[in-house]
Each structure stands twice: as structure tokens, then as C-alpha cells.
Image (cartoon, rainbow, N blue to C red):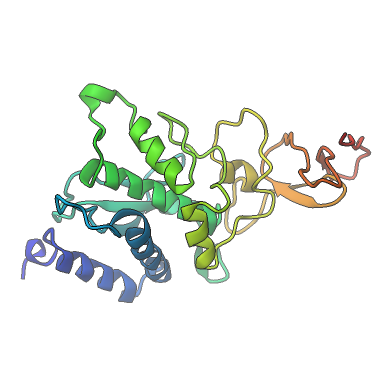
Length: 262
């Protein structure tokens, strides 16, 4: 049987790819099982839970794992059929995986990875699903994150920066994606809601920093009532607890002033 027959663009072929990923003896088997389960829930809650008059729907994605040769890219989606004729593939960049306790782990944490998956799913929704203003280079230039994309993403709780697409803030507490991830036991890392001003990189990147081979390069900061660890040299944030309100200072063994809240 040819690969074209096995991997043709139909639900049965997608199921065949998924079954292979979830049973094959390879490093990303557990990750495939986990994230296919999450994608099914995203499909039901966010994209295809309603019956649309025209009958169109967002295609179920194939989830892949590959080195995208660019550490700045967390994941990507395929708009056109790949070499096997599969449409709608979402690929996690394996450059962001680390070895942790004999398994593969997303260096920026699973909450960030969940945001990344729904981000790419929104691209599929817009491009080959239900979007009314899908990206076209002749119309949008390099703006793959246009107003329609950002509006749909915000509706689900994530906050991509227009044009660039980076998430400068963590998902809104109580938003659809936040509820889904927490239902699956995935919670934001400590300190995620304290954001430096005017930051223009992904929130998980500045919070967690560069992790290699499971070793953390985080720096501990404190406001007096709690500690957080961040991966940036500078951290300008104030505690939001009503009884505190202090500015965070670095715990580096040196004497620092604690700036009191009002």
C-alpha cells in the first residue's frame, strides 16, 4: 500500500498517523498521547462544538515534533498539504524540549505549551476553517497575526502581539484556554502574573529563561511576602497582594532597599 493511500487527506488517515505516533517506540510518544488528548478537547470546546449552516469545520490537526532550525520559533502550522498530502499539521519545535527525569519536557512549561498549541490551532481555524480574513501575503504582507487572528485568540484567552504573534502576557485567568488547561491539571508557573513593563518577548521566555539539559538559570526575586524565579537580568514588578504591594528585589546575597507599597 502506498504512503499516499495511507496518509491521504481524510479523518481515517489522520487517525492512522495519530495511532502510529502514540504507539511507536520513539522519544515523543508520551507527548503525542498527551497533546492529542488536549487537541481533542480544544476541537470540542473552541472550534467544532457547534453545527455550522455551511457544514464547514476546522480540520483535526496532525501533531508533529521536529527541529525547526530556529530557536525563536516555538511551533508552526502547515497551510498546504505536506509531502504525504496531510493538511493542517501543527509541529512543536523540538529545540524547546529538554531531557527531564528520563522523559522529554517542554523547557517553558506545559502551560506555555498549551498556549502555543491553541495559538497554532487558531491559525488553522482562520486559514482552512472558518476565518473570514485568512492571511494572504499579497494583502497582509508579513502580518500573519492580523486583527481577525488576534480577536479570535483573545476570545479564547491568549494575548498575541499583532504582527509578531508573541504572547507578552499569560492567558487570562478564567478564560476558555485557562479553564481547559487547569481541567487537565496544567497550572501557570509561579510568578507568571508579574510582568515587567514594555516586555516584547513571550511571557514564559522571560519568566523561565533558557533551560538546557534540565538545568535552570533562574534568578530568585522577593517582595517580602513571596518569592518568584525569573530568567531575565532585570525584573520590574510590584506584588499585587493587598497586604504587601512591595517592589520585587533580587535575592543575590546583597543588601537591597525594599520599596514599600502605598
